[in-house]
Amino acid sequence: MLYSKAHLLDLAGAAQVFYEANSFGTRKYQLHFVSLKESISTEQGLRFAGLRPPEAVPLRKQDMIVVVGVDFKSFVRGEMDAEIEQTASWVIKNYKKGVYLSSICSGALILAKMGLLNGTKCTIHWKCLDYARKKFPRVRFMDSQLYVFDKGIFTSGGMTCGIDMALALVEKWSNPLVSAEIAQEMVINMRRAETQNQKNTFLDFKNHFNPEVYKAQQLLVNNLQSSYTLTHLAADLHMSVRQISRLFKHHTGESIQSIRHKLRLERGEHLLRNTELTLKEIAGQCGYQSPRQFSRIWKAYYGGAPRSQRVFKKSLSE
Image 1 (cartoon, rainbow, N blue to C red):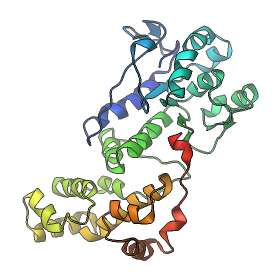
Image 2: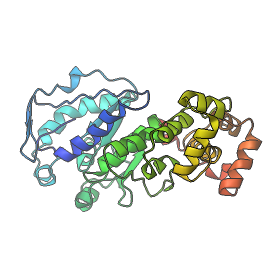
Image 3: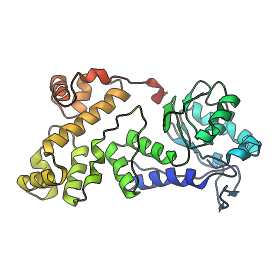
């Protein structure tokens, strides 16, 4: 969703992430660029033409409207007020029917002006923070996170944070492996919010570039079920069990089984934090025969019990 004097990087960074995501994994993303005007000028002077009106793009539940950031001073002067007023009903209508909302950088000001952020935790570019808190006192602006997900609304901080948020959304909707692959493709570091685990097994891709081991990691993350054995992995790679085991150890410093446990446990942590599945259901989805086996291996790697990670918040599915 573009408004006059939109920022190029706010648009391009997140769009590039979703564009790259179509090359990895199975979930496909369709990008539509809409605006009240058929043609607009960005703050950097580049002009976009051929933009579609919002109503021309039918949206379904769990699609997402991304509001791109605009020039802060121009917003304060009220230069976008008419555009915001004329598009507010379309945005609000779609949000009410289950379409996700998202903003990058100062785009949160637009959502706040529409009244969509009242009572919602969100973030924004640091330069806009003082103004935003005074102008929209009912909004719960946070300044300690790169991005915030609350009540089906995803907001990110300044400019490049839109990339972080887009990577996190791809991870949520696909898996961490896809996010790591995109980050590598875009030659960027994959950053996480402070409230999330900073250790990420999937980022080990950055430590080597061996194509066989890389493919092995892809196969492991896509086949966490217990029925997928080392013999199956070797067959899919057209290698012997001994050969792939030796390569894996040489390039990652760990055994295949150790990495597989970490992948399964990281999947388990995601499910514990973001779903209401039972421990038995989570164990099954992670490839373990029983909750007891899952808990035993969890304790061996992390200490404590997996139930301590149960912090599911319904707001992400509202």
